[in-house]
Length: 386
Image (cartoon, rainbow, N blue to C red; front, side, top):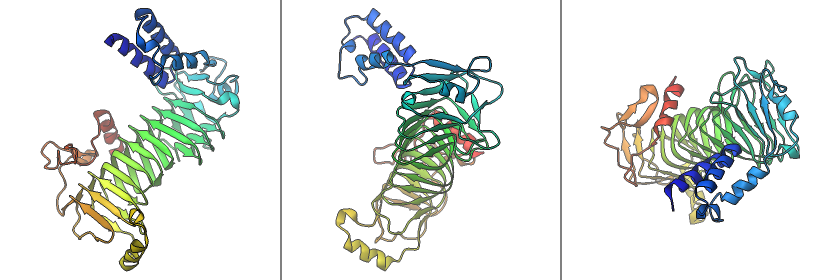
């Protein structure tokens, strides 16, 4: 198969995933004109297939523009004018913020894309009352919010029940109570964003930075993310290649792999099925646990439901006390009572391992222990460190 044809398909698929359907259509036309006999054009097993992309292009709705000089001078005006599903609302750059307080609801709201018209994020302001920038009503599906900045808001994007939303390239910290609120039974995917959050439930996130307060990460999946805050609870969630600058509470069925935590980790009482592997952790504390009661409950549980936290191939720094074997199952886990593991530049928020660290290459897969963040994510560390 011709590599140039494959490259065109990959570009078209990326444009399709980003809901840039006009760009996707041009790339598919180029693929067909240049390689008319390519099996890529007819292979139904591809995800996405060319036929699926063509179908999405054919059902695309209207394109509306928010600008200072056009008919739609606010996001609320543009969303109120939507008549078809799968429409695009693009927001032109402006020297001053646009008003928030927009609502997405009704059958015509399905598949709506709200995005920046150019490379710069337009700013949307909730006003003195701190209104939600965008409120997505129940049962609204396949919404994309791409390339926006939120300020002065109680909730940048307020997602009601049973919605599906993707948030990309968004920024929400300035005078923001929470850049995102998610109601039950909704699915949310977040990528390449910097957001202030109070809670994160049933979401997936990758390559993001979150500024947290007393925050709980519930039943979510985070990859290559940075979190900064105090008393961050992790319940039923999976974190991979993440850095947490702050203290953490480990709760039921938390799964951490290649995670670095900089402050105290508290193991909650009656914990079940927490799994930590290839992590760098500071001092472990145990939350008001009656060890005799814990041992009795453990015997009453089935073996696969036993109350426990498992540490595999982890490094504990600033930890001196022995781990209670009735609670913690530790395997290939090393305590480091003094010093640090050899972080690269902790004063600047960079807690990846320096070249001279003896713990490089010590993970089960021969990579470094702790978070292994790519260069683009490391740029966020300097910002969050301030």
